[in-house]
Length: 447
Image (cartoon, rainbow, N blue to C red):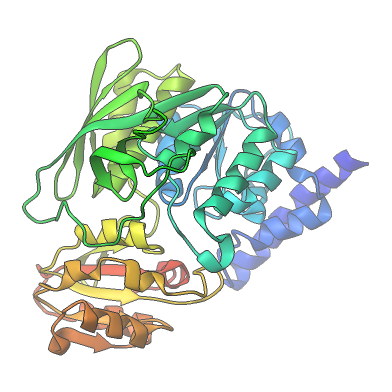
């Protein structure tokens, strides 16, 4: 009976998706999954049988979409078949959607790469056993939804505890993430050295850095701190310290790409170029390459070529041409992530900041005041605020020291972008910094 419901769910998913496309109502990344789970509540349990090799899950506050996207790209470049939620819908409905629209009853797939929302990882593991879990980082995000970091960490820990055979791939530079490896089979990645080679972007930030305590209660000390809590830390009281990474990264960060050298467990070193901006994306690339090497079966040259050819999904350092102007779109959604993105902004571009406070964005926008918008104080062109909280954003920019004659409030996001891309000088660039639901709206716009 349950098998019949599973096949019925597959058929319903196709019909619902076709209807959505015909009516041009939405991308269907969640609604199709919602219908699928209504028809067959344990749909994902059956889906696991269609994956021949490892199922990889990726979670963390920032970088999930880019990391899972790059892992998927590496596997596809090696001609493996896979299922992944590439559009970034990472709650249960989004995961169900990805499987429902991909699976064919008589076909099996080599791998699955699933991005999962931190709070939904436990529910995902109720039905879908993963072989590998990659955890990127833990930063304060949507306090009205997740609560403090200890709550977010408990969501992930509960999921890990459900799967005793899970291999963990953890960011050694994040003291909150490394805690997940205690008593478990874990592989660590981290940066030994980071060199900023750009005269355009800033290596420092004025954003407030939280003080993190060791599990013994004493404050952690750093001899290297790359950003936020990411770095080389130790506790002088109990001896707890950053674990020695299995995959050691050495990064050179340029204005619009990074060069990585990675030393692997056998002592060999490999070099990669990643055409993504910022140190935060270098971390995503390091995590992805580490995962690919742990999976095995993929030659170095394939991974190297995949790293340089990867193009991020919409809104994650996405490059578009709007009205003839080169445009960079970068999602901002929490203090640490926003501050790192703000370091990379071209101050000679017209800048649009589109902020909403819908449920998916987080109702609490206090994070704007903890983000380093002071990085924009030397902006040379227009800074246009837009979205539901356009006026709040304009006020934040005023206190960041941006000249008021450069700030324009235009609540309509499409009009704001058109204003930024109005110049007849096609060499003039545009930067768009949207919150999540503003990004979704932008992805559907035609210019």
